[in-house]
Image 1: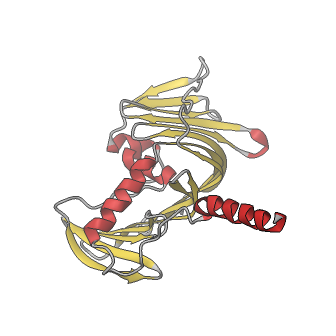
Image 2: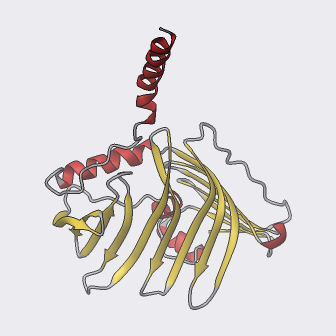
Length: 260
């Protein structure tokens, strides 16, 4: 009798635990007949919208013909309007601070004790950043988000490529290509091509992590083939949807200021 009761208890515990042991992600069948292009993009947008903030640490690297380097960073990001990056070099040397919002940007170079501030227009961002990215693209680079097609864009292809959903769209004279992971429902590769058939941007997001149904990549690369420039971001620690990310930073009172 005791053995029967024990077996019943084991069976009951197994039934209770079964849902918690089930996969967290409901993968979409990797078949273009399983979901329409619009249905897939709607799922991707819904998944991206779940991510509201990031707090993390890691390293960022930059390579070009003119210069190359890397630095450690601490980051706070809140979509869609705030980004704070504290940069640190070898031996804990403070390199600087980058703060971005819709209204202003602040870039402090501690080595030169110089701060540049202004309104984050496209021209302004290109004058202080060593890569051609807009405000939204910079935020997207740090959270692995890429610009999705708009309503007026024309679908050119929808297939399966390298175990990923593949879609391409034309928008004006540009061609956009997307490779979408069917497990995390996020873009893992993105390319933008110009009218002359040249790749303008190539980007990848991988090593995805998941917290309570919200996902983000730990590694992001963005390259500009024509300019031979590449940006790499690696998170050693990553907290998703931190309720109160801090955007507190300080600039020395004696720093030289350049307002643009």
